[in-house]
Image 1 (cartoon, helix red, strand yellow):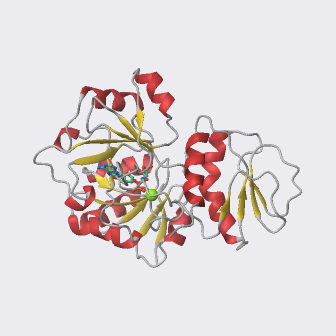
Image 2: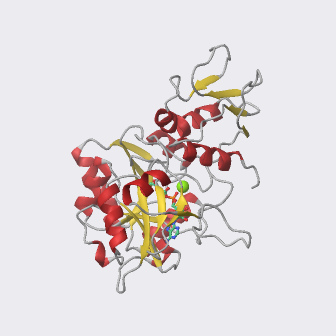
Length: 322
Ligand code: TXA
Ligand code: MG
C-alpha cells in the first residue's frame, strides 16, 4: 500500500532522494499532475515505473530536470530549443530533443527512440528533489495506464493502491492538465504532439514560429508520440460530452452559471473561468466516478485558450474502446 507524507517537511526531500538512490520509485507533485519518478539512469528503477502503471514498454517517459542541470550531457540543444527553454521553463512544457552521444539515460526511458522528452517542472517540492538528487528523473503521470491523471496525492493512492511507494503530498496541482509537448527532434519543423495549458498560439506568438500539429496517429496508424492513444484519461463511468440537459440519474459536470437544481452536480467553474475548469477537471472526474452512476454528463466547454486542451482530454476520456 502507498504511504503519503507531507512534501513540505524538509525530511521528505531527503527521504525521497534516499529512495531514488536505492532504485525505488517515488510519487512527486508537479504543477500539471503528480508524477511517478525514478532515477532516469537506472534501468531497473525505470522498469518499476512501467510495472506499477501497467504501461506498455513502447511508450517512452518524460525526464524531469532542474533548470541548473547541464542539459548537453543528455540532449543536443538547437537554438530554437534554447528559445523554448528561455521562454517557458520552468513550466508545463516538454521538449522532445535528439539524445546526445554518450548520454547516461536508461534505454527504457526513451523506449529505444533516438530522442528524449525533457521538462523542468515549476513545483518547489519536485525542484528540491531534483536539486538534491542531481540527475534527471523519469516521471510519467502517477496513474494506471489509460486511467485518470492524478492532481492530488489521494488520486495517486487510489490509482496505485497495490504499490508500496511513498507519495509526497504537495496539495492540488495548480494547472491540472499534463504539459504541452513539442517535438524539436527536427528543429526546422517543430511539431505540437500534445495540447496543454501553454497553447499553440501562446508559442507561435511568443517565438514567432509556425507549429504543425501531430496530435493523433495518422491514416497509416503511424504515431508521432507513442502515447497518443485515442482512449486515455478515462474514468470508470462512461462519459457523455457537450450535454446541456443532463439526465436525472447522471453526474453533471457543469460549466458557468447553472440553476443548481441537479442533484449530482459538480461545477467546473461557476464563473466560466477556463483555467479554474482545467484545475478541477481530473479531480472532478475522480469525484464523479465515486457516485457509481450510469454515466457522467459534461457541459460544452468553449474551444478557446486552455479550453482546447480540456476538450482534447474529454474526447479521449470519452472513448470506450479498450
Ligand atoms: O505534465 C506532464 O507532462 C506529466 C508530469 C508528471 O510531468 N507527465 C506526463 O507523462 O504526462 P506521461 O508519461 O503520462 O506522458 C508522456 C507523453 C507520452 O504521450 C509519451 O508518448 C510522450 O510523452 N513522449 C515521451 N518521450 C517521447 C519521445 N521521445 N518522443 C515522442 N513522445 C514522447
Ligand atoms: Mg499520463
